[in-house]
Length: 208
Image 1 (tube, rainbow, N blue to C red):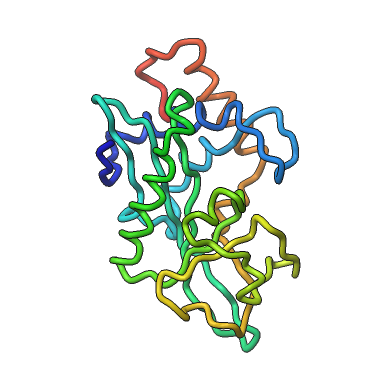
Image 2 (image 1 turned 45 degrees about the vertical axis):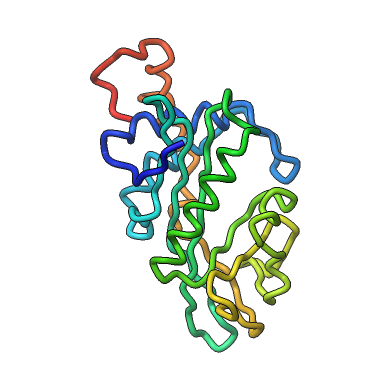
C-alpha cells in the first residue's frame, strides 16, 4: 500500500470509503445505531480550523484508495487553566474487503510517525483498547486525564509522541466541536445528498 497525503480529488472516494467501512461496524463500546455518521464527519471536517491537512492520508493499492485516516487538533485544559495542545485521529477507515489484513495498523503507524515529525506531542483518542494498545496507547487515566463531564473509561486513551509531554498534572480533554454536529444536519445531508448516490451513483451533480 502506498500512503500519501489526501488531495481534493480524493474527497469523494474517501467519503464513500468511510461509509462502506462503518456501515456494518459494531463496537462493544458504542450504543447500537441504525445509520453510521462517520462519512458526514469526513465531509465536514475539512472545513474546520481544527483539521490538520498535513495528517490526512490515503492508502492506495492497485489504483484504488483502500484506506484513509484524518487528524484534528484537540486540547487538554490543565487544573490551573492552561491549555496543552494535543491531536486526535479519526475516522480511520479501511474498505471492508481489506479489513483485518493490517492496512489500518499501517495507516496508524505511518501517521503517528508523521505527526511526531511535525512536532506534535501527544495523541488522545477514544477507541478499542485492545487494538490501540498495540501502538503504545495507554489509558488516559494514567495521565490523570478526564472527559469534560469528569469521567474516564477504557476506550479513552492517550499516546505521548514526546516522552513526558502529558506529564501527571492531568486535566480535561476536549475534542474539537466538529465532532458534536447536530443530528438533524447529518440526517438532512444524508437524505438530500448521500442517499442519491445509492440510487444513482453516476450522478455527476452530487456534491460529496
